[in-house]
Length: 221
Image (cartoon, rainbow, N blue to C red; front, side, top):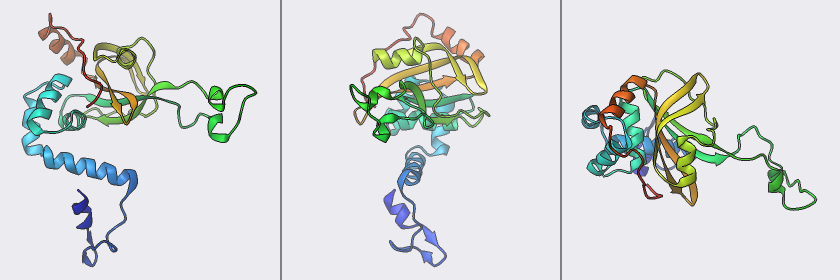
């Protein structure tokens, strides 16, 4: 993808290193990720595969082997091309951006260290990929309660599925979720597929009746 950035067009023709538009940091990373997904999983070929498989972790594992792509990238691409109302969410333990953190302002207590003064971290959304048909905005930094399938996936280090109570701004209720933990640069996180089409999920759940819906996955993708 770096070569594509080197070939970005400017008003003077194809740019060289010094003339090309300055695209870097998070924006560049996002564009590289999106470009790689379209190259490795082109819509014309990938969309029929999505239509012939349900949106699920199992389907993503199968398609990731076919396309030779990571599980994360495959799930995000599936969600972004499906007609089902769903979303891919990434969770990690963190504070909100609006919370005051004494540890970042060198405020020290009488005993211990400054981190003991910080608000307690919660399992919060740090990334959202909604399906095109979802039609609702899911804000980052929304938290999930202890005891839910998403939280238990984080706590126990096991894949979890089931109906989970969520408060995602205008989307409030119990939604069918598939969640599993993984490690990213030494930090424990959880990925979730949230299904908002309840009737469809119930039909899929009934069709899989009798199968185990809690499976272990290695901590890594």
